[in-house]
Structure formats: C-alpha cells, structure tokens
Length: 579
Ligand code: GLY
Image 1: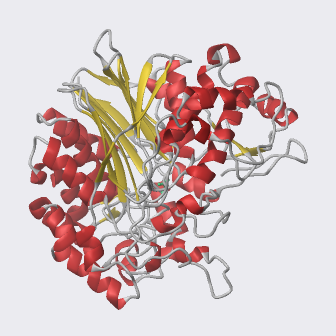
Image 2: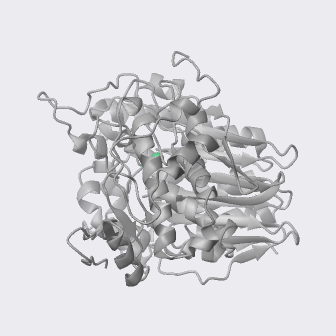
Image 3: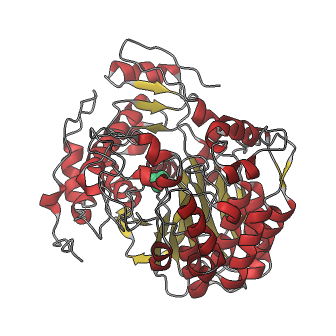
C-alpha cells in the first residue's frame, strides 16, 4: 500500500489506492536481466499475451501478426485496460522500405455529441457522466485499426492470429491476486450494469477471486465472428446490431451510422532527432509524440549523464522540461482535423531552446501560462476545415517493428458491457475537455482545442514510439498510465540512450512525473528520501507514490543483431525473445 510522507508544508501527501491496484496487478516482478532473442522479441503487460505473440513469430509470422495476437490476448486477460470497445494507435516500421507509418484508431465522438453535453442546466460539469455509464463511450476504433494493419501487413490468417485469444476467452484464464483486488475495487462501477455483472461477478455476487478461472463466452463468440468477417462484423454485422440494440434500449447515443462511418486515419508520424537517434511517434489526436519530442529537444541541450542518474539535479531539470510541455498540451493540443495544432513549432529545436533557456538551473519556477510555439511554425498549418491502457512492443527477425498502445481509458472503461457482445465500452469521452479548465480523470485540463464536437477524437497521451539509428531498427517503446505514458516512455528512452542501461533496467528504474496542473512532482517510492528533500528545498512540491505508468520496450543491438526486451515490473507482464 502506498503511503505519503511530509517533507515540509509544501509537500503533498499522495496516496493512490487506485494506482497501487493497477500497477501491482501482477505479482511477478521482473529482474533487471532483459529477455533476448535473435529472431524476434515481444514485450507486453501480460505473460499470456507475450507468449501468444512469440508463438506467432515462431510459426513464421511477422511483427504485425505478433502484435495482433498479443493485443487480442491482452483484451481477454487484461480486459480492464483495453479491448475492442476502445481505441488504439499503431506505429509500424516496415523493414522492406524503412518507412514508418501510424494508424489512428482512436475513438470518436458520436454524431449527436456536442460541446456541453456533460454540463447540467446550471452549466456545472458532471464528470460522472463522462466517466461511468453508456454516455461515456466514444465510437470504438480498435477493430478498424487492427483490420487496416491486418489487411496491409499481416502474413498469417486472422483465425490463426486470434486462436489463442479465442481459446482464453472460451475456456478461461486464471485470475491473479492483483487482478482480483482490482475487480473488487471496481465492483461498485461494474455492478451497475446488467451484462457487466454477468461477466465480472460470480453467482454469489462476489467478483472473481485469485485462482478462479474467468470464462468470457460472449466475448469468445464475438472474437470468432471477427476472426471470420473482420471489421465488417464489428461495424456492419451482428456485433454492430447488438451494440446498437443495447444503445437504443439503454439511453446510449452511438448509432448504426456512427459505427458504419468510422474510419481509421493514417497519419504522418511525429518525427524528432535526439542525439543522432531518429524518433517516430504518434501525432495528434495524441499529445504523446509531440510532447515526447518536445521534452527530448529541451533535454538535448544539457549533458544529462553529467547531471547524474537519479540525482536531484537531474530530476529538477527533467521536471521543469515536463512542466513546460504539459502547459502547452493544455493550450494547443486537440484533434488536428478540427483545430490547428502548432506541431512544427512545438517540436522544433528553436522553441525547445527558448523553453530550456527559461528553466532556472537551481530552483523551481511556477509556469503561469503556456509558451508561444506559434513563432516557430515555419510550415503554415492546414486550414482547420479540412485530433487504463496497455502497450506492447515487438521486433521481428526481418526488422519490422510495432509499437502499439490500446485503451478503453480507465479500468473497464465506462463499466458497461455492450449486451451479449461481451465487450466493455470505453469511457474515452472523459479525455475531452468537458469544460475549459475542468480536470479530467487524470487531472489534465484542456481548453477549446480539446472541446467536444461530433466526430472529433479526444486528446490522448498515448505514445507508441519507434526509434531508429541511421535508419536501422533500434527500439520500440510505449506504455500505459494516462499522462504518465509520455513521461514514462521518455524516461525509458533517456535511460537507454543517455544512461546506457539495458532495456529491462531502463523500464524498471524509479521515475518522476510532472504535468503542470496539478503543481506536483510525482515521485516513485523508491527514489531516495535525500533526493526528495533536496528537490523540495529547490521548491518542488513532492507527491510520493507510485508513478503509475507501465512501460514495455524492445530493442536491438545494431552491432550483434541480438534483440532485447524489458517489461515494467510496475505492470508485470513479460518480455520474451525467440532465440
Ligand atoms: N485514455 C488515455 C489516453 O488516451 O491518454
């Protein structure tokens, strides 16, 4: 259990039961030894999912086949984090051409959604509606994203790719102690909805316990239809019909047209260069790639190694860079199909230099407003006419790479199972700014750029990232944890590139997080008290507790060709290589 600690009156006590549950779900802590292989490596947040991916690689599949097998299995054994009732972002490196592509399968606001839909008659935001229940869900995009990846890049049949996930749904998987505690914690939410009760509660009205076998027959049947008919079933077929029936009978607003009209968007990756490494990450409607590159650009001007790993001086510099980026996130980020996002300015070296020069080296300052990246927009932006989570990474023997982050937002999303489909509906509408300055579940604030509009995609922090060196594969990384995805992914990258740690240690190391609002420097418990006291003295408001992100990463040693993988012990899981 997390405990808080005072260092002074300006220290915040941070006790996060929820984060403790989420990030101690799996009991098996990884050692600091990375997994390795010569013919591929997979890392995910669940042992069975990683094994499903490695098995496909072993049977001759490529990285895309392995990613599909892994994510479908994650949806069965880790249904609280992601599922086909949600959305996802793929970043893929194609070995044959060296090209890096992204697939935006983010949920989108239904056609009848509108800006003030979560305000009551007095204009007061009702966050409960964007978080729990049928109105909290956006139109799911995961199946469409997977279908695009499958049709364009997969080498194995859907049936083969989905077989292990279908078996696990049909015959069950063993519930782990951390999972059982999480189910119980979420019971008040899940117990409100008829079909959720059917899936997550036993006959005696208790949730599934450690050692129980959790069977999901309805989900297995849905997966079988998707294995046969792909996206057609989900967006036009039997699954679509049942989703629409359930929506109509329960006051929901997602219609048959919303499902039929859903399209993935293929977007140019965010590109950055950090100390000679090429960084490719997810563009808006994720803020992940923009701010990852922005913070790396700020850090590039300092000798990070010299500042010293796990030192107060390093964390001070890092926190200030994070804070500057998150102040801009609140102001500028949203769905680029609806608002102008100054991506070029935000990711430019010049703007990063300006932000860096404003950071005091020995004390913390409070940023009272965002910066002005617009001055650094050398390419005119387009006219706006024309925006709990899991991650997996894989490299195959040919050098194809996938970084895939998927979500239904918070644990079990909206809490609603969509009738007899067995699918949990996301609560991604909460990632919109439901009113300017009103914090969402993650404490993030936003403004007009991320206001609700019909068909718009809510701003995300997901940050699937692929890194190459001289155009050759180097690393695939990403994670879970809302805004902490950005800062967790960032620190894993720094730990490899600057601190030269192996990939397992890179994801296990203590981390910090700052997101501007609230004014708190979140701190892993295992960071030394001396360091916390020193940061507190510099003016940081320390919030001690789990820095709730789970990072998965794989990489390749370009000299030996050996691939390595690391899985964050905070979220358990497994990295496994194919020798
Ligand atoms: N739902 C979390 C995110 O997309 O950032």
